Length: 398
Image 1 (cartoon, rainbow, N blue to C red):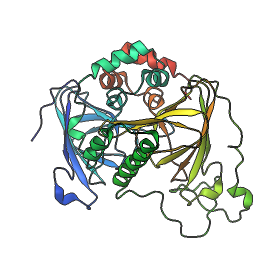
Image 2: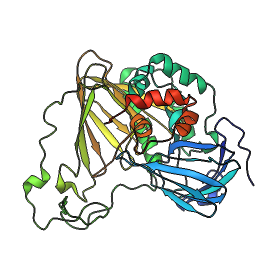
Image 3: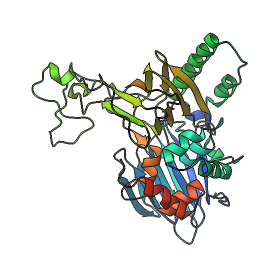
């Protein structure tokens, strides 16, 4: 039966995952029903562990997802139609009609998880610092606080927060104070528990079937990965681009230099890649996701405040320094910021030859064609004028 959609988003999601149907455990599938009032929005969000396929029960929906190339793929679907949202990519649905609408979503996971972008950024507990959000969205601290106030005490998308590891995290973040050595150990324990749980039934890139398959980047055949070159040399497995710092004189104060299959063709089918991140003082690698990879980060020099947000909207964060390692689980929103007075740099490794990246602010406010103001204003609870002001900061992005 339909559920009432009388909330500020005008939509209600009713999950049918392993938390509601225990028999789904190990079966790799789940569903949800989404009910929309007129103008109702299922706001921009991701499912870090699942692809979604949506069937319209009745009404009409404008739907879309944004690729890691910042291209908005969207259309209008009606009763009986199906639309698919690839795993880990930001997507949304909105009912621009005058009557109600409803849809059934299916997922290739018993527990797909969800990160509603606005709530993830502005309602995480403990809160993400204003300095991270103001620089990421290019707005003032006062504007950040104003948006946060809209989400204060708000049980955002509570129906979707059904995690098998929620109690583990709640227990661990309430551990009593301890010395620095024990604190580091507890962080390792937290990371192992979180990663072990969300990695269940999730694999990295497909296994290789031969010694090497050096990518032929010029081959016109499209496939999952790249066709193999007939001949290769040692240079196909080599890249010197991470050796030296890159200037970070941009609005974020950071520069990312990738070392994936596009730079190292020999990585094709090998399920691994790297990147270097250089930070100026105050530099931010803004909130973003990697839809196809877990990230493990090693600090070359300097000091970084890092964190990720779980699908239960818990911010897991700490300060790391030269020689330290921190891990960001696959598909979850995460960030790094250099709050020090000098430069910093880190090396990131990924369990994918092409992890992809969706920088949240750029994804929502600089997609082409643009995400409509009606979607963003309702999602972030701000005016169309405020949406346009943020979009103007990202003109010509990246």
